[in-house]
Length: 401
Image (cartoon, rainbow, N blue to C red; front, side, top):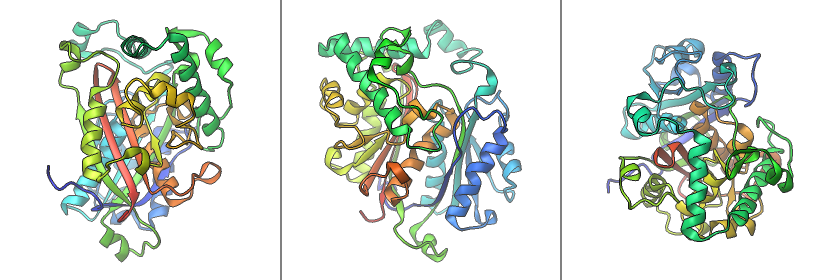
């Protein structure tokens, strides 16, 4: 394996808008909100940014297909701005582009920024005019809730877990996210809920009820990265937060066409995280990762991801969830910011929002939800369906840790 990027790139600054129903703000306003926080945190002028990656998934909504809207709304200094779109992993892809540019030595300072403004579309779920010729042929009636509901059915069958028990674990996940999100001023949903309310909620796609599903939202997040040496030259003092690994795995069709995939796990997550742990030098994730931010588009996704990340043994994730292993005071805190469940899912911003929480926690600046100073954190971003997806895994930690 190549040398990788471990400790070659550090985060100079980050920003995140408030997520929610932002009727009063345009997509450009949300970009400016996260950018202004990031550049103030970085302590640089915008003219010092040499390249940018701009994440936007739903190009028909609000901003168009190029990097122009980011360059114009932020008045960037005629630098290259590359528009990125890779399903729900779009935000993580923007960061990977910026990090690779700095690690290669092509530029000293690069920016990743993502945005999505979905509430204006009027859809309860993600807007979709067509899946394209290939997907309309293979899965013409597929929906996100229906697809992930099959995830739960397959998990229950493959591991012999009674559906009532699995739903108890899924309810614990949703309850936990709302407990965490209630402490986060930037979360879309900040109301605590009971497990009983989760279990009695209207059904969306069995066994997924209303509170097992994340919603849509408006939001933006931004990261500015550089090398450790340049950060020192720019006067960045204190602990530096470094990128330990950045990996992406994309389905090649095996899950849809071969019997070796049983539908109870995300193959790409297992591939991406194996590469990421190798790149970051992690051998025991339960002991080395104090926290994870994962793509909880549905409660069952978070449960299965705990196994795919090696934080639970296969078929044991539901037991660990019910035992509180991933609660705020558990062994590995999961979605301490409230996750997609409380932030919603503005696609171009979600991956960067996850990294933003890791960055805040690693620096000790997470406020009421601050964990006891974690040294390493992981962000997991999953786009698409269980049988057809893009997975991004980013590992962060204090420089040299």
